Amino acid sequence: MKIGLLDSGIGLLAAAAAVRGLRADAELVLASDPAGMPWGPRSAEDVTRRALECARAAAEEGLDALIVACNTASVHALPALRAAFEPRLPVIGTVPAIKPAAARHTTVAIWATPATTGSAYQRGLIADFGNGARITEVPCPGLAAAVETADTDAVAAAVRAAAALTPPGVGAVVLGCTHYELVAERISDAVPGAELYGSAQAVAGQALRRIGAGAPSGAAAASPGGVTVLQNGRRADRLPAVALAYPEGLALAATPASAATT
Image (tube, rainbow, N blue to C red):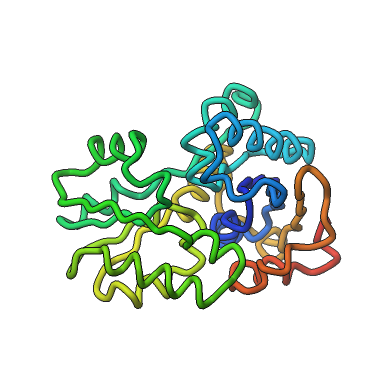
């Protein structure tokens, strides 16, 4: 079983770790676009083109499912990706967890990139799944870029700025960018008492359901799957060094050399 994940950079790590947590034996193909990141400021057409290039490179590895582990790419490129690959290859997008957050809490903040905050896409999700909750959209300029470079000072500053825009006592914070899940603990510390809602676990579970993959057993449960790293369509020897700044990246990098495909 081989699962591909695409993102402009290391935002795919959270979903990759979630897949590994559910199926340790899954082979992972991590396709990123370091030459084009970040995707947030790019046009919809450019994001779509770049996402398709990542997806085609990953698909050549013989995937069973493809996770679009990026909110921006899911907004702009998901229809084109599904048109290009489905039904032969299931494509799973990433949607901010507004529905479960609003189902449990009457006050919700959505932390997202400035491009996503206030967008028709996000406003549509709020209208469809807000469940009458009082929802505050919080732009987080610079946070994804700080996470991408593992700049701890910049992460701290961006988190403080977003926390200052978040209503006191808010019940839930929805992480509307996959990069933010890599610093979830820091966000939680900045918004005490709020329950955080990411998308990685739900996306990983949906990918496995789409291909009918249940829990592993026997030797499969004991044997970790390999990791293939693709950067701009070419195989890399290892994960980017910045990935090792996060537990999710360290866990993936610890795949035994005998199992890894790099």
